[in-house]
Image (cartoon, rainbow, N blue to C red; front, side):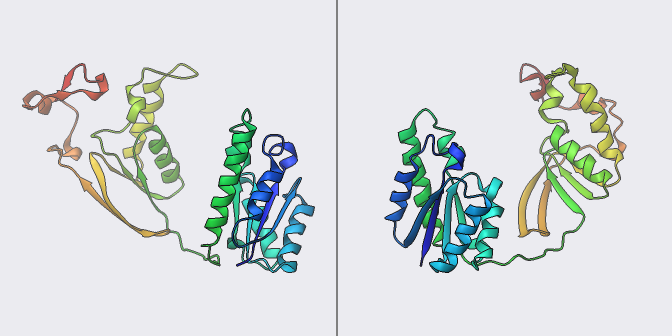
Length: 269
């Protein structure tokens, strides 16, 4: 195995806190590392070309880039690896900017030691990486949303309006979540019920949404595009289609429990 390690200065974002030379020298002594380099901007065209050429010149079969977030430049370095003839999934990134330089800017020594640790972790991880190839997976129009708070409700409405078939699962007997317990919302000081109430009413009115209240997810099997989900719906002893919210069933219910919507200071049926 021939691993190349590249440490980025990130235009000072990293090098003004982390000792780049120390991290490079540390990486140089790790098993299977045959090449270490540091550069001011590895994401630049010059930096990318350097990695691509080094892969060919030194016959590298793994590459680690200690730099910024893989969410930011992961694709950039995957392209550089592929340009050099290396499978793009045999390159890894160690995030020493956000996790070291930015998180510990007042402690350069600790930031440097952490950068060494993350670099070593990246080296060990990449040894187990395997060449991969992108695949296409057929995706249907059925969506499961777990949790019917304001986020779940809005997601269900957006997807339902877009034509997706939505199963919305909520473990409590009613939807609304924490927002239903609020009087007003930050920062506009709007009435929480004014925002939430209409959306709650829109859920059963949307023909593309199947609502499962007082239900729990028992099992999820499968993979992207082909999930099988088991939903356990607990008994409510009320026929939802016939309920008109008259309250008569509550009058004769023999059981009282703490009312979570009153933070347990009162009882409900």
